[in-house]
Each structure stands twice: as C-alpha cells, then as structure tokens.
Image (cartoon, rainbow, N blue to C red; front, side, top):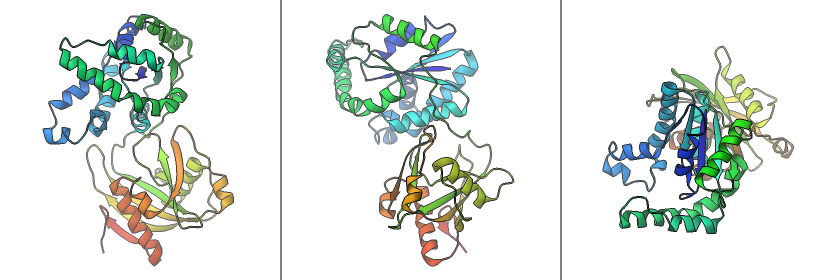
Length: 344
C-alpha cells in the first residue's frame, strides 16, 4: 500500500511524512524528489531545458511508478510518498500505473488556510544558503495559483486534513488514525496492465448531427482517446469495439460498426505496438447522447469535437490515425496504414 501525501509546495508534506513513518508499522519513506534529482544527471541538458518542472517529463512519471513498485517488492509494507501533484492527468497516470501493479494508493491532502500557508512558506529556511532558500520560497509562492486551481478536484479525490492549527506530528497522527480506521479509502483509478507483447485494439468513431466525433478522457493515461480498447483473445475486433463502447459510455450499438482503417503501430519500448483498428459506429442522436454514462474510475470526461479541435487533445500518433480514418469515411473505403502512413 502507498500513502500519498499531497498538498501545496510548502504545506509540510516531507516533515509530516517523516513523522508518519514512525507511526505506521513496517513503513518506508520514498521521496520522488530523489527521482527528479537523478534525472538531472541522466538526461541531456537540452531535454531538461525543454520543461520547467521534471513532472512534465514522461520518464519521471514512469520512474516514480517503477521505483515505488520496486521498493515495495524489496521491503514490503507501506510506502509513504510526499509529493505535490497538481495536474489531474499526472495523478491519474501515476496512480493508474500503480493500480495496474495491484498497488493500493491512499491519497491524503494537507490543506492549511492560504494565509497560514504563506506564513509557513515565508518562514522556510532549510538549505543553509540564503539565495537557495529565497528561490525555494519564490517557487512555493509561484505555485499557489495552480494549487488553488486544482483545489476542487484534490479535495474531491483525497482525504483532506486541515493542518492550519496542526504541527507535523499532529498531522501525522491524524493521518495514521484515518488510515488505520479506513477513513482514507483506496483511490479508484484503474489501468490495464502493461502488455507483454503486441496487442490488437479496436476504436470506434461515433458522430453527432454536426459530424463531430466523440472523444473520451481516460483517467489512466495522458491524452484523449476514441472509445474502444484491447481485443480479448478469440474476440471479433468489431464486437470488441461494441463491447468497449457499452462498457465505457453505456451505449449499446444497434449494428456492427464498419471498418475504416487498420494501422500497424511500431514497437516503441517499453510498448510493444501492434494492430490498431478504427470503426465507424454511426451517428448518435440526442437521445443517445443523453444516455452517455462514464465509469469514474476509467474515464473523466467526454466531448464531441471537430478534426481541428482533436489536434489539441489527441497524442500525435492517434491524431494521424484519426485523420486517415475520416478520409476513409469520406471516400467510403478502408485504408491500410503502417505507423500512420497509408500503404498499398
């Protein structure tokens, strides 16, 4: 199990975590800041200069999951992880990756009043170098705006502890008691386990009366996606697409969808690639749209979008696939793609 302590920069996560490991039997502290620091010695300076925060590096998010899983395999028990996560898609990606490894995450938010938080930030002096401490305080203050913006989803997702009047030791005792009594529930983010070989996946394009198509926002990976998923062994691909549409958004399609394209996705370690099929699921009427239902643990949102709008939502590989699927639909044909490029 992991107890993930979230909160604004300067909220006292690290000091609370150090107290907490003394209260939870067989617990170990893991600070993902160490993983970020390690990347500074691993990645080229050019790549590091492309981001303002190492959380924006996909390798950091993957390494956090892999390191936490490896630590638990090595020492067992409970990991206490103090780390600010203000972007919901990063929370989803990391917690989903842990869930795929059957690692339970209990999400806790330290949430002091902002005036008290600012006072605590101004009083921080932990590096022994006035210039470094000043930059650290400036960093914390600069991220109060993003914290306020994320506050609604954080408090809805996490067990929230108002630490305005609490010391780190008192906050830790409150968290330890909440974990022991089950008041801190397991986070519901889910993710399909990482594949061990090439996969076959079926996606379905569903259109509205303006010829926009439906995209969904998965909780377990960055970027939007078409309704659909991995085809199970022995399952017809088109039927797999129909099953996924029913499971993901609650709609039973009346007819088997028409194939638009087949795209071979090349392996890109740690992924294995495989075949990706896109089907035309037809047009949804207002009554269909009114019946859309999302499983909260898997999908966060849905929307109908135009081709141009999809460019801002879909990862490049899926957007290229989409563009060719729309061209195939316009021409009434089926396209064969290799790594997003039509062949044959």
